[in-house]
Amino acid sequence: MNGGPSGFNNAPVTRAIVIASALFTILFGIRGRSSKLGWSYQDIFTKLQIWKLIVSVFAFTSTPELVFGIYLLYFFRVFERQIGSNKYSVFIFFSVIVSLLVEVLALKLLNDPSLKIMTSGPYALIFSSFVPFYFDIPVSARFRMLGFQFSNKTFIYLAGLQLLLSSWKRSILPGICGVLAGFLYRLNIFHIRRLKFPDFIASFFSTLSWPSMGSASPTGQGRNAVGNAPSYEGQQVEGNYSARSSSTINPPEDSIATLVSMGFERNSARQALIRAGNDVNAATNILLESQAH
Image 1 (cartoon, helix red, strand yellow):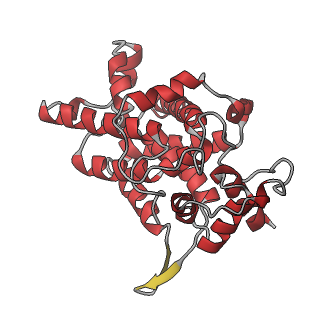
Image 2 (tube, rainbow, N blue to C red):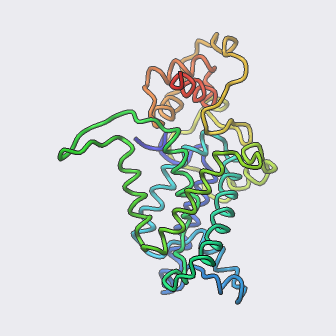
Image 3 (spheres, helix red, strand yellow):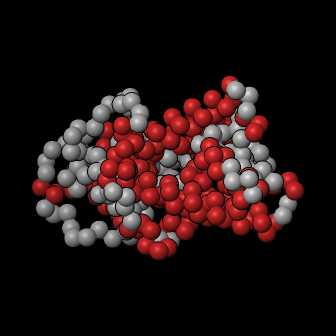
């Protein structure tokens, strides 16, 4: 199971974050300052070193964390394709802000000397993404190994566990706060999933990084328009698809691959795309609804 077609097609926000994380981590590592990454309560509220907070959103403190973190960020690009870059930008902003606020509160309440400095990296985004991954990406294959049962989602969970335990308490707390932020987004508090940034903010990411590698999606087919996609959560689809189902054009392979990567069967994905007029977002809702019944 992967995150869809190879490369960053229809995922410019994820591409920008992956590039920023890699560059910040490498830059601070080359300069021998990786040990100084991470922020503390005193850095932000006493010394007012806001730059540490900004850097901590992107830069990992070690190479193993970078490898697992980049892999998970790359995989979770499937959610940007599903809800659109605009709403995905809102999801990122909400996850980071909420996670940081909860971390600050936890540090104040716990008053644990071993938690004076938090680990650095996009933990909020990564672990908040595990919430839709758990609820909305179905298991499509199961297998047994050494007497244990695994699924096609197991490796993603193992990569997340490795990242969660990478710095013990210093990484566990940000991971838990990220998961909490993901749940709050899913619960749609303050109607957060209705919010959208002005289109130029989300599309700005497209100009920050070079064109993605991999096969490009045909224009107007299987592409998530910025700010014009439904929530990643299975939800009621307005109206019906009888008008769209008249389309006899075979769905593009990259659209089918995107749905298959979410765990749906190939034939079901193809039929849903035909019903939805090759609209990946609408086809996803059709498949999720069919599983709910």
